[in-house]
Image (cartoon, rainbow, N blue to C red):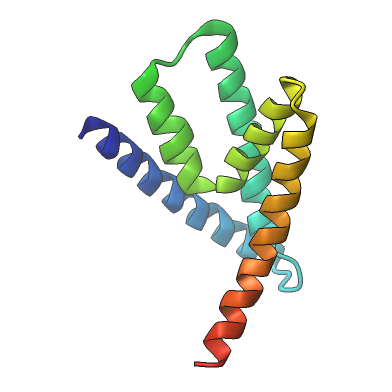
Length: 125
C-alpha cells in the first residue's frame, strides 16, 4: 500500500507541476501555433530523469521508495516522455540497439495511430 501511496502522491505533484509550467510557458511565450509548454515539460523531464538516474546509478543516493516516488510518481505525472527517453537511452547504453529502435518506432507510430483512431472513432459516434 505504501508503494501505491508514494506513486500516487508523486503523480499528483508531477501533474500539478506540468500544469503550472505548461500554463507559464503559454502565458510567457503567447504563441498558439506551437506547443512550447509540452516541449519545455518534456525536455526538462528528460533532463531531470537523466540527472537523477545518473545520481541513483553512480552514487546510490535513492532508496527503492524514493525511486518510486521520483521516477514513477513525480516524473511519470510530469511527463511519460521522460520515461520513454530514459528507457530508450538505457537500451542503447546496454547495446540493445534493435530494441531501442523498435521502442522509438513503436511509441511514436502507435501513439500517433492511436490518437488518429481515437479521434476518428469519436467523430463517428
